[in-house]
Length: 352
Image 1: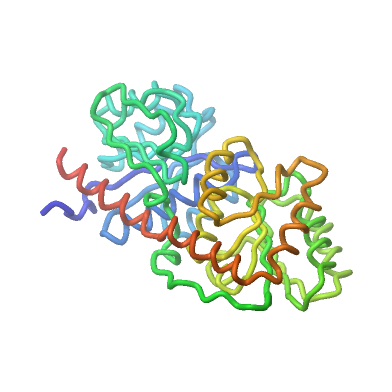
Image 2: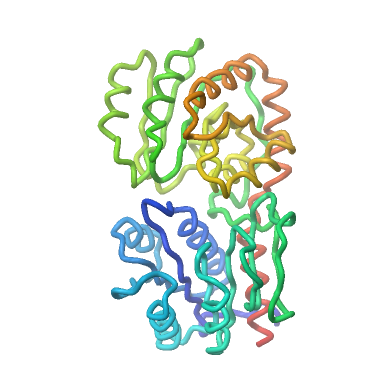
Protein backbone atom coordinates (compact mmCIF):
# COMPACT_ATOMS: atom_id res chain seq x y z
CA UNK A 1 0.00 0.00 0.00
CA UNK A 2 1.45 3.37 -1.02
CA UNK A 3 0.29 5.43 1.96
CA UNK A 4 1.38 3.03 4.66
CA UNK A 5 1.66 4.00 8.31
CA UNK A 6 5.03 5.39 9.27
CA UNK A 7 4.53 5.02 13.02
CA UNK A 8 7.59 2.73 13.02
CA UNK A 9 9.50 5.32 10.94
CA UNK A 10 9.02 8.56 12.86
CA UNK A 11 9.79 11.98 11.45
CA UNK A 12 12.12 14.49 13.06
CA UNK A 13 11.42 18.20 12.58
CA UNK A 14 14.46 20.47 12.90
CA UNK A 15 13.16 24.03 13.12
CA UNK A 16 14.20 27.31 14.71
CA UNK A 17 12.00 30.11 16.06
CA UNK A 18 12.63 33.11 18.30
CA UNK A 19 11.60 36.79 18.63
CA UNK A 20 13.77 37.73 15.64
CA UNK A 21 12.76 34.87 13.34
CA UNK A 22 9.17 34.75 14.52
CA UNK A 23 6.91 31.71 14.83
CA UNK A 24 6.02 31.12 11.18
CA UNK A 25 8.56 28.35 10.62
CA UNK A 26 7.55 26.57 13.81
CA UNK A 27 3.80 26.87 13.21
CA UNK A 28 3.88 25.38 9.74
CA UNK A 29 6.04 22.51 11.02
CA UNK A 30 3.51 21.87 13.76
CA UNK A 31 0.75 21.99 11.15
CA UNK A 32 2.57 19.49 8.93
CA UNK A 33 3.21 17.28 11.95
CA UNK A 34 -0.52 17.31 12.65
CA UNK A 35 -1.18 16.29 9.05
CA UNK A 36 1.33 13.44 9.36
CA UNK A 37 -0.27 12.43 12.65
CA UNK A 38 -3.59 12.34 10.76
CA UNK A 39 -2.01 9.48 8.78
CA UNK A 40 -0.73 7.79 11.96
CA UNK A 41 2.82 9.13 11.77
CA UNK A 42 4.89 9.75 14.89
CA UNK A 43 6.73 13.10 14.92
CA UNK A 44 9.51 14.53 17.08
CA UNK A 45 10.78 18.13 17.30
CA UNK A 46 14.30 19.49 17.75
CA UNK A 47 14.32 23.26 18.33
CA UNK A 48 16.41 26.04 19.80
CA UNK A 49 16.16 26.74 23.52
CA UNK A 50 13.33 29.25 23.83
CA UNK A 51 10.56 28.74 26.42
CA UNK A 52 7.83 30.00 24.09
CA UNK A 53 8.96 27.60 21.36
CA UNK A 54 9.21 24.62 23.70
CA UNK A 55 5.80 25.32 25.24
CA UNK A 56 4.16 25.60 21.83
CA UNK A 57 5.58 22.24 20.75
CA UNK A 58 4.43 20.58 23.96
CA UNK A 59 0.97 22.16 23.91
CA UNK A 60 0.54 20.94 20.33
CA UNK A 61 0.94 17.38 21.59
CA UNK A 62 4.44 16.56 20.34
CA UNK A 63 7.60 15.49 22.10
CA UNK A 64 10.46 17.93 21.72
CA UNK A 65 14.13 18.39 22.46
CA UNK A 66 16.40 21.42 22.28
CA UNK A 67 19.90 21.94 20.95
CA UNK A 68 22.48 21.77 23.71
CA UNK A 69 24.75 24.80 23.38
CA UNK A 70 25.00 24.62 19.60
CA UNK A 71 24.69 27.49 17.16
CA UNK A 72 21.84 26.84 14.73
CA UNK A 73 22.91 25.11 11.50
CA UNK A 74 26.51 24.65 12.70
CA UNK A 75 28.54 21.43 12.69
CA UNK A 76 27.46 20.89 16.30
CA UNK A 77 23.82 21.38 15.29
CA UNK A 78 24.25 18.81 12.51
CA UNK A 79 25.77 16.30 14.93
CA UNK A 80 22.96 16.73 17.46
CA UNK A 81 20.28 16.53 14.78
CA UNK A 82 21.76 13.35 13.33
CA UNK A 83 22.11 11.82 16.79
CA UNK A 84 18.51 12.67 17.72
CA UNK A 85 17.17 11.19 14.49
CA UNK A 86 19.28 8.04 14.81
CA UNK A 87 18.53 7.40 18.48
CA UNK A 88 14.78 7.76 17.89
CA UNK A 89 14.70 5.57 14.79
CA UNK A 90 13.73 8.38 12.43
CA UNK A 91 13.74 7.74 8.70
CA UNK A 92 12.87 11.29 7.68
CA UNK A 93 14.10 14.72 8.74
CA UNK A 94 12.15 17.85 7.86
CA UNK A 95 14.20 21.06 8.08
CA UNK A 96 12.50 24.45 8.15
CA UNK A 97 14.79 27.46 7.97
CA UNK A 98 16.14 29.99 5.50
CA UNK A 99 19.66 29.57 6.89
CA UNK A 100 20.55 25.88 7.03
CA UNK A 101 22.49 25.79 3.75
CA UNK A 102 23.16 23.20 1.06
CA UNK A 103 25.96 21.46 2.98
CA UNK A 104 23.79 20.90 6.05
CA UNK A 105 21.05 19.26 3.96
CA UNK A 106 23.55 17.21 1.98
CA UNK A 107 25.17 15.79 5.10
CA UNK A 108 21.81 14.81 6.56
CA UNK A 109 21.00 12.95 3.35
CA UNK A 110 24.44 11.33 3.28
CA UNK A 111 23.70 10.02 6.78
CA UNK A 112 20.88 7.95 5.25
CA UNK A 113 17.80 10.02 5.98
CA UNK A 114 14.99 11.14 3.72
CA UNK A 115 15.41 14.93 3.88
CA UNK A 116 12.69 17.48 3.17
CA UNK A 117 13.46 21.19 3.27
CA UNK A 118 10.64 23.70 3.82
CA UNK A 119 12.16 26.75 2.21
CA UNK A 120 10.89 30.27 1.51
CA UNK A 121 13.65 31.17 -0.92
CA UNK A 122 15.90 29.47 -3.47
CA UNK A 123 19.31 30.50 -2.10
CA UNK A 124 21.26 27.48 -3.35
CA UNK A 125 20.86 24.19 -5.24
CA UNK A 126 19.12 21.54 -3.16
CA UNK A 127 20.64 18.10 -2.50
CA UNK A 128 17.67 16.73 -0.56
CA UNK A 129 14.88 14.48 -1.80
CA UNK A 130 12.10 17.04 -1.38
CA UNK A 131 11.64 20.81 -1.14
CA UNK A 132 8.35 22.45 -0.12
CA UNK A 133 7.49 26.10 -0.64
CA UNK A 134 3.79 26.84 -0.27
CA UNK A 135 4.21 30.55 -0.86
CA UNK A 136 2.04 32.20 -3.48
CA UNK A 137 5.05 33.18 -5.61
CA UNK A 138 7.06 29.97 -5.17
CA UNK A 139 6.91 28.88 -8.82
CA UNK A 140 8.50 32.21 -9.82
CA UNK A 141 11.69 31.38 -7.91
CA UNK A 142 14.69 29.64 -9.51
CA UNK A 143 14.85 26.31 -7.72
CA UNK A 144 17.52 23.80 -8.74
CA UNK A 145 18.48 20.32 -7.61
CA UNK A 146 22.15 19.45 -7.09
CA UNK A 147 21.25 15.77 -6.68
CA UNK A 148 19.08 15.74 -9.84
CA UNK A 149 16.27 13.90 -8.04
CA UNK A 150 14.70 16.56 -5.82
CA UNK A 151 10.92 16.71 -5.86
CA UNK A 152 9.73 20.33 -5.63
CA UNK A 153 6.26 21.04 -4.21
CA UNK A 154 5.74 24.71 -5.05
CA UNK A 155 2.79 27.08 -4.83
CA UNK A 156 -0.16 27.86 -2.56
CA UNK A 157 -1.73 24.43 -3.09
CA UNK A 158 1.10 23.28 -0.78
CA UNK A 159 0.66 26.05 1.79
CA UNK A 160 0.86 24.31 5.15
CA UNK A 161 -2.01 25.47 7.36
CA UNK A 162 -3.33 24.28 10.70
CA UNK A 163 -6.04 21.60 10.85
CA UNK A 164 -8.70 24.20 11.65
CA UNK A 165 -8.26 25.52 8.08
CA UNK A 166 -8.46 22.18 6.28
CA UNK A 167 -12.21 22.45 5.71
CA UNK A 168 -13.55 25.99 5.20
CA UNK A 169 -16.84 26.92 3.53
CA UNK A 170 -17.15 29.80 1.04
CA UNK A 171 -17.61 33.10 2.86
CA UNK A 172 -20.80 35.12 2.72
CA UNK A 173 -19.73 38.79 2.81
CA UNK A 174 -21.84 41.11 4.96
CA UNK A 175 -22.92 44.48 3.63
CA UNK A 176 -22.02 46.26 6.87
CA UNK A 177 -18.67 45.92 8.65
CA UNK A 178 -19.26 44.48 12.10
CA UNK A 179 -15.80 43.27 13.13
CA UNK A 180 -12.23 44.25 12.25
CA UNK A 181 -9.27 42.02 13.13
CA UNK A 182 -5.69 43.22 13.59
CA UNK A 183 -2.91 40.62 13.55
CA UNK A 184 0.71 41.67 13.19
CA UNK A 185 2.60 38.47 13.92
CA UNK A 186 4.41 37.01 16.91
CA UNK A 187 6.19 40.27 17.73
CA UNK A 188 5.60 43.98 17.13
CA UNK A 189 9.11 45.20 16.39
CA UNK A 190 7.82 48.32 14.62
CA UNK A 191 5.46 49.24 17.47
CA UNK A 192 2.54 49.25 15.06
CA UNK A 193 -0.20 47.68 17.16
CA UNK A 194 -0.87 50.66 19.46
CA UNK A 195 -0.95 53.07 16.51
CA UNK A 196 -3.17 50.85 14.35
CA UNK A 197 -5.58 50.23 17.22
CA UNK A 198 -5.87 53.97 17.82
CA UNK A 199 -6.45 54.58 14.12
CA UNK A 200 -9.15 51.92 13.66
CA UNK A 201 -10.86 52.97 16.89
CA UNK A 202 -11.23 56.46 15.42
CA UNK A 203 -12.74 55.37 12.10
CA UNK A 204 -16.46 55.93 11.51
CA UNK A 205 -18.85 53.02 11.95
CA UNK A 206 -20.08 50.77 14.74
CA UNK A 207 -17.60 47.95 14.21
CA UNK A 208 -15.92 46.13 17.09
CA UNK A 209 -12.19 45.43 17.13
CA UNK A 210 -10.16 42.32 17.94
CA UNK A 211 -6.37 42.28 18.10
CA UNK A 212 -4.06 39.29 18.42
CA UNK A 213 -1.14 39.88 20.79
CA UNK A 214 1.76 37.60 19.90
CA UNK A 215 4.00 35.87 22.44
CA UNK A 216 6.99 38.09 21.65
CA UNK A 217 5.22 41.47 21.98
CA UNK A 218 7.24 43.80 24.23
CA UNK A 219 4.74 46.68 24.15
CA UNK A 220 1.75 45.03 25.80
CA UNK A 221 1.35 47.78 28.38
CA UNK A 222 1.16 50.40 25.63
CA UNK A 223 -1.41 48.33 23.73
CA UNK A 224 -3.54 47.88 26.84
CA UNK A 225 -3.42 51.62 27.50
CA UNK A 226 -4.90 52.27 24.05
CA UNK A 227 -7.68 49.80 24.78
CA UNK A 228 -8.57 51.55 28.03
CA UNK A 229 -8.95 54.86 26.18
CA UNK A 230 -10.89 53.39 23.24
CA UNK A 231 -14.35 54.53 22.22
CA UNK A 232 -15.48 51.14 20.98
CA UNK A 233 -15.10 47.52 22.19
CA UNK A 234 -11.59 46.15 21.62
CA UNK A 235 -10.87 42.52 22.44
CA UNK A 236 -7.23 41.63 22.99
CA UNK A 237 -6.47 37.95 22.38
CA UNK A 238 -3.15 36.81 23.81
CA UNK A 239 -1.24 34.10 21.90
CA UNK A 240 -4.38 32.15 20.96
CA UNK A 241 -4.16 28.44 20.26
CA UNK A 242 -6.78 28.93 17.53
CA UNK A 243 -7.37 31.92 15.27
CA UNK A 244 -9.93 30.55 12.82
CA UNK A 245 -13.03 31.83 14.60
CA UNK A 246 -11.52 35.30 14.94
CA UNK A 247 -10.86 35.34 11.20
CA UNK A 248 -14.30 34.00 10.33
CA UNK A 249 -15.96 36.66 12.49
CA UNK A 250 -13.93 39.49 10.93
CA UNK A 251 -15.28 41.42 7.96
CA UNK A 252 -11.91 43.08 7.40
CA UNK A 253 -8.39 42.40 8.66
CA UNK A 254 -5.16 44.32 9.00
CA UNK A 255 -2.34 41.80 8.86
CA UNK A 256 1.39 41.37 8.60
CA UNK A 257 2.27 39.93 5.21
CA UNK A 258 3.62 36.61 6.47
CA UNK A 259 2.05 33.19 6.86
CA UNK A 260 -1.10 34.68 8.44
CA UNK A 261 -2.08 35.95 4.98
CA UNK A 262 -2.62 32.37 3.84
CA UNK A 263 -5.01 31.70 6.72
CA UNK A 264 -6.92 34.90 6.02
CA UNK A 265 -7.10 34.01 2.31
CA UNK A 266 -8.36 30.53 3.15
CA UNK A 267 -11.27 31.92 5.19
CA UNK A 268 -11.88 34.68 2.62
CA UNK A 269 -11.34 37.64 4.93
CA UNK A 270 -10.51 40.78 2.88
CA UNK A 271 -7.18 42.07 4.16
CA UNK A 272 -5.08 45.21 4.30
CA UNK A 273 -1.51 43.87 4.35
CA UNK A 274 1.62 45.42 5.87
CA UNK A 275 5.00 44.34 4.57
CA UNK A 276 7.25 43.47 7.53
CA UNK A 277 10.30 42.03 5.74
CA UNK A 278 11.84 41.90 2.28
CA UNK A 279 11.13 38.18 1.91
CA UNK A 280 7.39 38.99 1.86
CA UNK A 281 7.55 41.01 -1.36
CA UNK A 282 7.01 38.11 -3.75
CA UNK A 283 3.94 36.68 -2.07
CA UNK A 284 2.48 40.14 -1.52
CA UNK A 285 2.72 40.77 -5.25
CA UNK A 286 0.81 37.58 -6.06
CA UNK A 287 -1.88 38.24 -3.43
CA UNK A 288 -2.24 41.73 -4.88
CA UNK A 289 -2.42 40.46 -8.46
CA UNK A 290 -5.03 37.90 -7.42
CA UNK A 291 -7.12 40.70 -5.93
CA UNK A 292 -7.12 39.47 -2.32
CA UNK A 293 -5.22 42.25 -0.52
CA UNK A 294 -4.75 45.97 -0.39
CA UNK A 295 -1.08 46.73 0.33
CA UNK A 296 -0.59 49.52 2.88
CA UNK A 297 3.19 49.67 2.49
CA UNK A 298 6.23 48.86 4.59
CA UNK A 299 6.00 48.69 8.38
CA UNK A 300 8.95 51.08 8.79
CA UNK A 301 7.40 53.82 6.64
CA UNK A 302 6.05 56.85 8.50
CA UNK A 303 3.00 56.85 6.23
CA UNK A 304 1.98 53.24 6.76
CA UNK A 305 -0.65 53.89 9.48
CA UNK A 306 -2.32 56.55 7.35
CA UNK A 307 -2.26 54.17 4.38
CA UNK A 308 -3.94 51.48 6.49
CA UNK A 309 -6.69 53.93 7.41
CA UNK A 310 -7.22 54.99 3.80
CA UNK A 311 -7.50 51.36 2.67
CA UNK A 312 -9.97 50.48 5.42
CA UNK A 313 -12.12 53.51 4.65
CA UNK A 314 -12.21 52.65 0.94
CA UNK A 315 -13.42 49.12 1.72
CA UNK A 316 -15.77 49.91 4.58
CA UNK A 317 -18.77 50.81 2.41
CA UNK A 318 -17.86 48.67 -0.61
CA UNK A 319 -19.23 45.15 -0.04
CA UNK A 320 -18.91 44.32 -3.74
CA UNK A 321 -15.15 44.83 -3.67
CA UNK A 322 -14.86 42.95 -0.40
CA UNK A 323 -16.78 40.04 -1.93
CA UNK A 324 -14.37 39.96 -4.89
CA UNK A 325 -11.39 39.99 -2.50
CA UNK A 326 -12.92 37.21 -0.42
CA UNK A 327 -13.48 34.92 -3.41
CA UNK A 328 -9.98 35.63 -4.73
CA UNK A 329 -8.41 34.55 -1.45
CA UNK A 330 -10.36 31.32 -1.23
CA UNK A 331 -9.53 30.45 -4.84
CA UNK A 332 -5.84 30.94 -4.13
CA UNK A 333 -5.63 28.99 -0.84
CA UNK A 334 -7.93 26.02 -0.24
CA UNK A 335 -6.42 24.90 3.10
CA UNK A 336 -5.50 21.39 1.95
CA UNK A 337 -1.76 22.00 1.56
CA UNK A 338 -0.62 20.27 4.75
CA UNK A 339 -2.45 17.07 3.82
CA UNK A 340 -1.03 17.17 0.27
CA UNK A 341 2.52 17.52 1.58
CA UNK A 342 2.01 14.79 4.20
CA UNK A 343 0.66 12.35 1.61
CA UNK A 344 3.62 13.04 -0.68
CA UNK A 345 6.15 12.52 2.11
CA UNK A 346 4.51 9.19 2.96
CA UNK A 347 4.58 8.10 -0.64
CA UNK A 348 8.23 9.08 -1.14
CA UNK A 349 9.49 7.53 2.11
CA UNK A 350 7.63 4.29 1.34
CA UNK A 351 9.77 3.97 -1.79
CA UNK A 352 13.07 4.12 0.10
